[in-house]
Figure 1 (cartoon, helix red, strand yellow):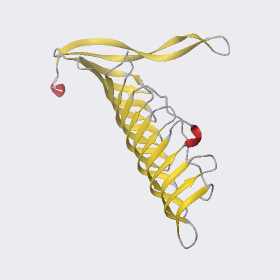
Figure 2 (spheres, rainbow, N blue to C red; figure 1 turned 30 degrees about the vertical axis):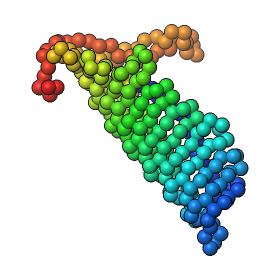
Figure 3 (cartoon, rainbow, N blue to C red; figure 1 turned 90 degrees about the vertical axis):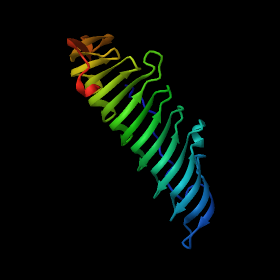
Figure 4 (cartoon, rainbow, N blue to C red; figure 1 turned 135 degrees about the horizontal axis):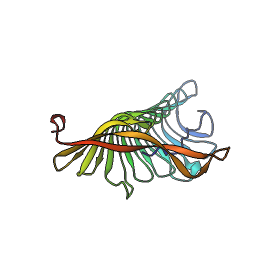
Amino acid sequence: MSDVDSQEFDDEAGPYLGVYEGDRNEEGERHGEGKATLPNGDNYEGQYEHGLRHGQGTYKFTSTGTGARYIGEYHRGKRNGQGKMYYPDGSIYDGQWADNQRNGQGNYTYANGDNYSGTWVNNLRHGQGAYTFASSSHKGTTFKGTWVNGKADGAGCLMHGSSHRYQGSWSDDVMQGPGKFIFDFSAEQHGEYIPVEQDVEGAEGEEGEKQQSLISKWRAVKITGITVDDQ
């Protein structure tokens, strides 16, 4: 599964920078509804409280020249709560935020069309979620299961359309250990994925040795009918 993520960036810091039009409190702080143009050209329109973005607002990253923007909740100057971010590469995140990072439940549509819907912790897929591939070679394939720090890790199910699916375990984004393929013609193939190192073509280490990557190879054990827990 893809670990490519969109560029991360924060709103311009400093509530008193740039040009501001809007409400103020008795202390002269930005307070209430207002519009601000920051020194770098970015724009914010929405609610303020004691000089900080607080409540509903829209922040446009005009300086990137790509239409990147955030529409949603702020708390004490940071993205907190529910909000939608449009990134410079065309990807979109719609979900929960905490301290300017994706935290909680959210849906991310990547620039290549892939989609993840599930739990996030500090901008990484973490917890339970489903990742659906959009590329032609994997179109319609969906992984549902456990994520740890952005990678599939733990129990999961990889569904290849309606024809068959694989139930088993993952470690560091690689299928490992016992599992089974479940086919739509009421049969299962039981076996296990065994980690195997293979040479990476065209890649060499400092001493000229071949660099290796870890893959998993399937070893079938038996074929049965559909077991009770899959009916």
